[in-house]
Image 1 (spheres, rainbow, N blue to C red):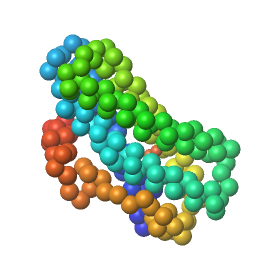
Image 2 (cartoon, rainbow, N blue to C red):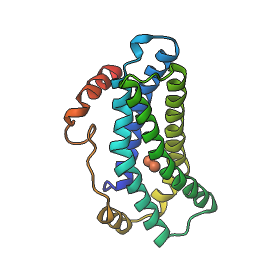
Image 3 (spheres, rainbow, N blue to C red):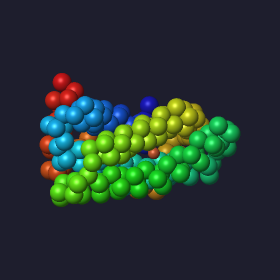
Length: 188
Ligand SMILES: [Fe+2]
Ligand SMILES: [Fe+2]
């Protein structure tokens, strides 16, 4: 079977889930009072990735998929509801990435950011991302996979947006090499 953009975004979800697991392990250590875990750069790397690829390329691609779906197919009521919720999340998630990035940036530049506040914000970030992945994988992708045809997928691909994954794409971009090494160690 030909690989469609749905396979690509599904693979993106697996990658995002692993990064969220890595971030979760840092946040748990931070919550436990481990000062070693307060490595702002490490936390920032993961959040930056979400701003770089999922927010800018992955979610817009999904929006294209949904638009093409709606143009050619009838959504079940469950799918219609899920699409409305996910569309809202596609607006709010990038804002959350920016808010968390700004907080981490302030902490990196010496502002007094309370540990509890940082943990709460990062928890919220992780939970929001996971809830979003579950909604797409659980309620949206199965019906898209069932109803969309090869022509629909060609259309989605032509409409874009185009963009490369800076970690899991053909090569790891320089700014993400540390994160990639950590990920390898985390998974080994
Ligand atoms: Fe997604
Ligand atoms: Fe999404």
